[in-house]
Length: 222
Image (cartoon, rainbow, N blue to C red):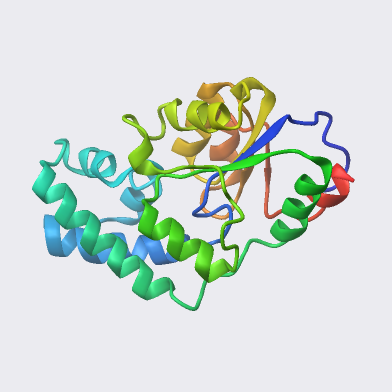
């Protein structure tokens, strides 16, 4: 980041996919393959850009098909899609540039942070292991922790609550349009990453700023 960010948060809420790691290509490929195999849907690039964008798998399936899947179909799809994602991503995940320095700076300033993701516990454990973070994100909100996923504000409201904070006092980092809508709807200030969606779409969804990575954020805190 160049220049000064004119506000210091009480806490920071991080999405995982596309924020901690630029892994959107692996998810897109898994969605294309498993949607065809399980749902009989050939997803277009427009589908991937605008419907497979933040939220939990059943909610995304509803966007694609117009019908919320029953429990058996949702479970079958989830297992196949996330398993395929992990097989594609294994050994290839890298943290977004500047992230570790930023997290170190947050720790050094006593600013707590939380993970707020639509991913399940298996994918979160996989991501933390692949990135070498171990238990660093001790406070977490996962897809199974909420009744209404992104773009509903519930995930970010819960993330702030688990830090003992008001969402309005938190900074949120998201990469997807529906994620930005969720965080902004909760009252967070949102700095989005352009790892998944274009800057114009992220700003239109409610982000205050869009950046390519976390370069400079540690210096801002220092």
